[in-house]
Length: 363
Image (cartoon, rainbow, N blue to C red; front, side, top):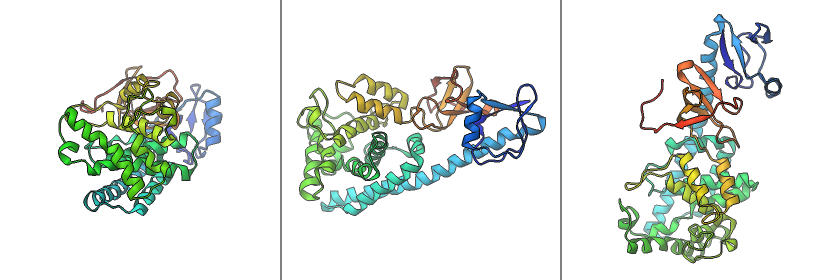
């Protein structure tokens, strides 16, 4: 007999073999369609896995293949939208840098496409570290912040139109950097005090671009000015009272910090997502709003797709799927055993260690 976990069986898939309990009785017959209702009935009965007889050994591979193929389809759609968004925003920022203008329609359409795509594939966006930043100083950072703001906005119950406005605020929050010289913007080392003073001007410059030149409304322009403000008044450019900031500015502050610390720099190693989450929680109440930060942490991917982990039963595996609202309980494929562990179902199984991506792979 071989185990087949409930999490491995996709909805709408007919079973190719009879599924047995530990006493040899058929629990679910061959040909039965897996449905959300049947899954819930089984879960309520504390049934987490079935047994296959010898003729059904290949079913684990069949379901794992289906499991991964569905993820691949989602990844390809997400990659297409994400890549197109990066291209569009990069082009518009370059136009701003060269001729002092950009196409507001492109920004609006990019925000709309991101909101629509994230609405369908949120966990794939959050789980795909591989398609994200290769160079922190590129315009990819603006896309990442917009993605995080959409996710945070969804969790705050903002409607689609409000999510799009939050996304535009995220896309444009660093537009002031188009007027910072590349010698500072792309410097492969820590900035001097004077260079940092110049860099910090990007907030004020960006706000002026958005309000005076491009005529954006306050709820979109505010994030450019205020995303470096902090709760204790130590932020810049004005050190203003946190309570006076627009919601978009507070959201951008959280999202900007997270994306910055998980981005690789020449002089600083990127934090892994779970390390970044721990860091964020150390600066709440002092630099960031506790409520917003907690909401953010609950909805991001602590263990992105492809993350290699060791479980507390000493099995080594790869994160292959994420659950909305449960960032610490992903689905983990265990290659050496040809099975998966759904940590949302198997409550006693926990992630004990996250492997550095540069280590040798499991298999």
